[in-house]
Each structure stands twice: as structure tokens, then as C-alpha cells.
Length: 477
Image (cartoon, rainbow, N blue to C red; front, side, top):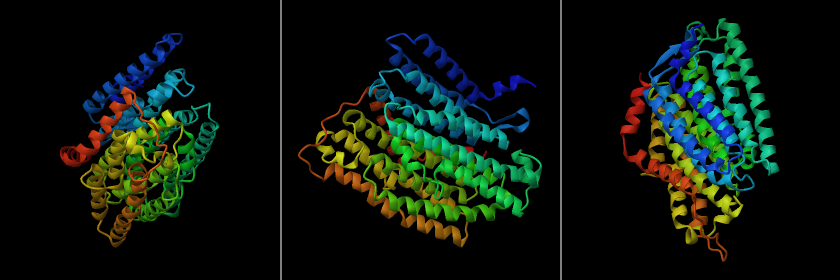
């Protein structure tokens, strides 16, 4: 085997180099009092540099088609790396306080980058076993991150639920992949697409595969783990799980359905219609009832996953571009919300919505930024969230069937209750009065920078058409 082919996997190779650097840096600084600030600066700087190979990487195929990198996959890696960079900035206060005192900084950074490496492999797989390897490389470190807040029993419980669900969903997925292998005699994506036919065996394989990945995306009815895991995990990990992990899984599912199961489009489109309607509707109904902010954002993320899947219905270049643009905007808006929740939790120890009563009086800047992010998630113009929803609606409508139009209409109607429950938080901050509002907070510099980047994305992505045009061009390559 020509091991020099690893050097053609430019984004992955550079990320492995970052892992090695962080490992030895953590080892060298194990007894230093400056371990936390040095590792934090090193991690952020390296992730910032990681954006360069994602931009410069060329489409390539190595190891006989096991690894297939496209322009769209490299663009998605760029988005995932940007989201990870913002999460790394948000984590600074939590890692340096709340009983941690910087002790977990090295472990957190290594697990964060390891998870990102698994997502890279997922997005550039050309073989089902390669895809499964990437999925597990992302899932196992993520379970460790979820359970990392070891001073709180909820974190251990969340980690247990996540790993059990991940194991169960992986088993279901492998069961479906075995059916596909039995029908086609190969696990290479291109070969399966050429041999696949609609039979009871392949339909069962499609359903089991979709169900397994549906757990990762927390689509209804595979969503039951989401709220408990989001609530118990550290807030920065919840933010990472809700956007970066979800974006990678959505892109992988989109490309596999369009590339591998192209001859079964009618079957998986009908499956998507049902799941999208259930995810958006049920998540909206449950989100209205939540008083805890992280559980609220869990059901919000389930609803957003349903909207992301609308892009897949179109089965076109526009669908892939819309999915990537939606993920990009979702990263900016959702991470902004979680950054504010994290600041409140670190300073006040609560994530209850009622704690935000009168928040604008003492923290007007944080209230304003959170309002912008919530408006973007709700799809209110002129923020980027409105355009991301518009593009996924257009991609789904491009399919042209009555069923597609019906699903788009139901999704459009569901924006009304979503606007209602997002405005409940705005009402709490601006309108509800209390004699004891939260005191004024001062965020750390890393969180301020993360919020600035997210806010810039919320505003600029809505007015700068060049971003979507670029994504549309790479999706067509």
C-alpha cells in the first residue's frame, strides 16, 4: 500500500498534526501554572490555521475510492471547522472555572479536535465502512465530552444516555448496511449506485440506515435522547452537539441518499416527507412547554433538523448548496444563543428561562445579541435565518411533486409557532419585570470574540449574496 496517499488527504492530515501538537503540548505543560491559557491560545490558533487547508484542498480520490473528497465536502469541512473554533472560544470560562481550574483543558481540546476529525472522514467517505469509521470517530469522543462535567451527576447521566443511544443507532445502521451489501455485493458508493435495484431487501436496508443516522440528527421519532443529553451536558458541549455534529450528519445523509440510493429516490423521498413533518411539528409543540433553556434549545434543534432535511428533498445541486448555507447560518445563530446561555450559567448557575426576567435592564448588550440570534432562528427578515429557510423551501419545491409542495406548506405554517416560542425568551428579557434581575455580567474576551463572529454571520450572511453563490458553485463541481 502506498501510504503517501495520506498526504493527499490535506484537511485530515493537518488535523492529525494538530492532534499530535496538542497532545505533546498538554504533556509538556502538565505541571505548569500557565497550562490553561497556553493550551487555549494554542488550540484557537491551530483551529484558525486549519481553515487554510480546508480552503486550499483540491477534490481528490485515494485508497481506491475509500476516500473521495469533493469541492462541496471541503466547503462543509470549512463550515464545521469554523463552528468548532467558535465553540473552543466559548469553552474558556467553563474550563477555567466551575471546579475545573483548567485541569480538563487538554482533554477537552483533544476530544474536540478528535470529534472534528471523525466528521471530516464522514463527509469524504466513498465506502460505507469508511463512513461508519468516521461516524464512530466522531461519536465516541463526543460521549466523553458530554460526560466531562464530572462534578455534576446530570452530565454523567447525559453521557450514559448518549453512548447507549449512539451504540444502538450504530447497530441499526450496520444492520441496514449489511442488507445493502447482501443485495449488491459491495460497499463502495459508486458500485452500489450502479447495482442497486428496488427490492424488499434494499428497502429494508435503506430504512435501517436512515433510522441509524436519524438518531444522530435527532429527527422524530429518533429524538428521545436529545433533551436529556442537551440539558445534562456542559453548555459548550451542548452547543457543539447541536450544530457542528448535526451539520456533518445532515451533509453525509444528503450526499449518500443522492449518490448511493439514487435509484430509490421515490422511496427515500416519501420517508423524508413523513420525518420532516413529524420533526418540525412535534418539536415545535414540545418547545413551547419548556422552561429550561437547554431543553428548549434541544427541541428547537430537532425542528431545525427538519428544516435542514427539506434541502435533501430537491435531490439537486441547489439542495446541497441550500443545506450547506442553512448549516452555516444555523452555526452562527445557535452558537450565539448558547454563548449567552453559557455566560448566564457561569455567572449565575442557572439555565432557567425565568432567570432572564429583566435581563435587558442589567445586560442590554447580551440581550440584544441573543434577540438577533433568536430572530434569525425564527426566520425573521432581514437576518440570515430568513434567507436560509427561503433557500431550503426553494430546493424542496424544486422537486415539483404535490407531496413536496404539501411538505413545504406545512413547514411554512410551522414557522408561526416557532416564532411564538422564540419570542417567549425575548419577552422574558425585555418585558417581564422583576425586583431581582440578574446582575450585570462581564464576558471573557474569548466569548466576546465568539459572539462578535456569530453576530457578524447573522447579519452579513443575510445581505451578502456571494456566500450562497460560492456554495452553489462548489456544490455543482
